[in-house]
Length: 249
Image (cartoon, rainbow, N blue to C red; front, side):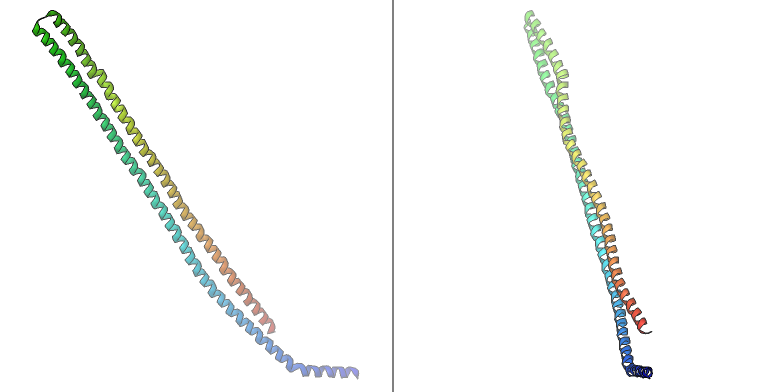
């Protein structure tokens, strides 16, 4: 009898609680559906955010490329300028060096003319002295005049040969030294310009390489960011779907 009463009470309790349990099940199902709808909305929002992030990343990559390109072009322009400046200085130095050599040739010719004039004066004086002695007809004076004339002619020959060659050579040597000094400075500037140009060209290539790395880094960072956004939203959606499926059983 007691067992029957217990069964009756249990059945009654179940019958009494049945409306409440049905309401709870319905309420729980609505909540799960709301969670699922919210997760789906969040997933769609994540996709939109990821798309926006991708666009932002592409813009950043394009900016990195443009910055690298402009920096590289600036370095290449500098390379052209410093190279051109060095070549221009060398060209000017070469012109000045040639002018120094031309001046040396002119100085050498002037040295020869000056010494030839001096020799001509000595010869003229010697010839005049001999002529004067011959006119006077005095043997001793004639002999003395001839001796002086021979000496002066020899001296004139020495002046127009050995001394002239020495002075002309010195003038050319001085001019060549001056020319070498001037041109050497120009060559140094040209070499420095080429070195600076090579450095600028390397910097231009380095700027492009740095820009390429920056673009890759920006792309990689952006991909990780968008993947994380979508991954979190997808995990939430899968969890809501699983809970909804479990609640519907």
